[in-house]
Image (cartoon, rainbow over all chains, first blue to last red; front, side, top):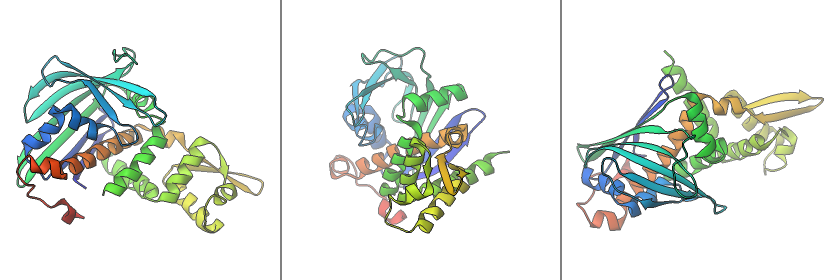
Length: 162
Length: 126
């Protein structure tokens, strides 16, 4: 398991995850830069992601949807704020409707991804911040289908991969 | 300072959920209240063994039990599952899934073929 650290800050509703990959920074960045690669990692196999618009440039909007086992599509968007390839990416992540237009009433998370070279590979630090506890709740209700049950299903996958 | 407590809590949650039967029990009791004996019928193990699994989930705060006559009725505790800490834990699971898939993709022959070979053999880490 390449996850080396998890930090949860309940007060600021921030999750920071550190992972180490046995690949150079450019190759790790390459996954985010290539929508065909990104969709292989963004959603679990049971909820595959499809990226429609994709460009890692400041101001750009990335759109994607995830398809449930029942065939329902759940849209999402990123708004790219800062890019320093291949070292960092800052963007907002929100929910979209069926036409992939942003849902204004849905919560938005602030995300910072950082990649740095370490001996033998890359250290990645992922930070996601939610504005309010209600926003967090909403994210789970909307985005992570069936909230608790799905996360339990995902544990299956992560244990299998460990 | 709540970090230690949250870590302990995460440990208890992960331990409780690091078992196939217990995850299956959780799915059932999150969907609705079940008696322990009704749960036991779903598994090829003794009533006592199922009772032990339910007790582990109860200790982790994932299940609440109430007694009606002779029956022990178990319900998934939505409040626990929904506390901010556990919400972050849910998101952590999503992330762990993504990171595991990143790792797989980076290790796949098509990926490593297009770049320099991976210097770390990740299979040795576990």
